[in-house]
Length: 97
Image (cartoon, rainbow, N blue to C red; front, side):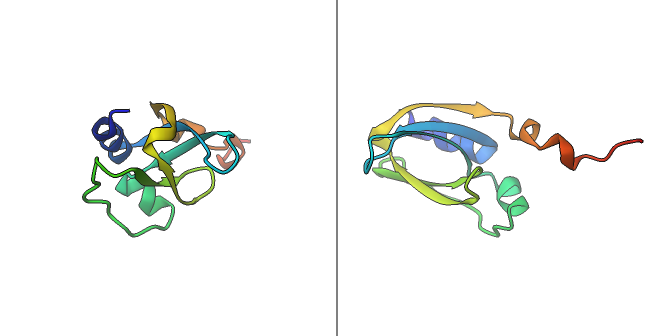
């Protein structure tokens, strides 16, 4: 895993990370972010300035659990950027009728 690339994309917007949970062996697919705008929208007033890419664990804001979560870098099987804004519930939007 290219940790620097992951951190950069997570700070730019949202990413999905797939990893194996240590306790259960279950594969977790987690949409997450380190983006200040997305964090602020979740009520989190923290700016992530520096992340040590040599660290064995990474902490991110989980967009589906709405909480900080961490994972071990060595357990990551895949990660990719996502367009989080398109994941909104359409029933929240107003209608013209």
